[in-house]
Length: 375
Image 1 (spheres, rainbow, N blue to C red):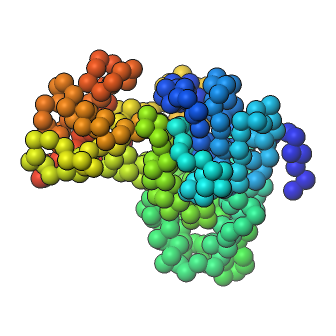
Image 2: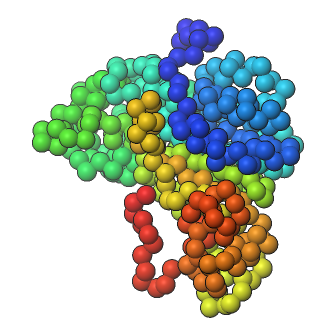
Image 3: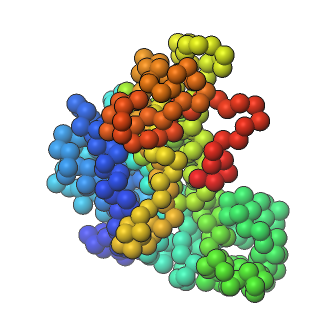
């Protein structure tokens, strides 16, 4: 595309940088710590980790070859401590096997579209700029948004817009697309955005921002298989965490956050029989939640970086089986394994500090989990 790879495209402001470093800090200080940046992007979070923790080894993953090239230049001075790999984040087991690294101590997911992808029209992610309908994060392979829009059956397009974009006007939008593509191939983001806008009732267009955003989100998720990949990636990351290792995940829309929440919650609860007074071996929680639900950005963060407005941050620490048993016996928890009191930030479970929802265990029949359906 004629891009000067020495000059990063887009404006890159790492989201919630200080909060991420605060949460990951204890794990980054572990002896021989290995940190995985699952969504390396332009390398802002990775650079800060390497600067502040001079003994950490970084594994940086990204499916976007252009982003990897820019990140490699940015992190060149840390070359002896970095492994930058062209890979999707669910490929972690393969990457670790090839590097001969058995476990990791720290990990960060910054999901969604990067500044590089959003700010350059030729990538086709932005509905506010005219560009070819591409939307591939890895432009070396895969189906494009143009192919999906022009070749998928109408019923499949409706499913994609409803499921991945939560678009209630999906049938109207798809009808408009089908009529247009019968006249000629739809090839540009501007034309697609115009079709979406015209298909949505005028009253609905007056609220909620650009009417095309849900359609573009849905197509992007389909093009890149984002949700299927995430459903594999989070368990792989948690399985690879060493005891006392920590993982931070930042999501930008509810579909992503729902997947993350489900996996973290499942591993922070007991799986043993509910009526036993003690935890059976192998049934205790393996995670301690470090955040109370999902953390939103502060007003100051959003003022500095408007793209942080929709972020939801969740963080966990890996605990071993003995820690899990101690966690359930912590003062204040009694023997209520299914509904334990929270763990704490800045200390061991049960000590004063930050309250969390760690290890809540099973709910009584008919009870509704706090925050269910909303983060």
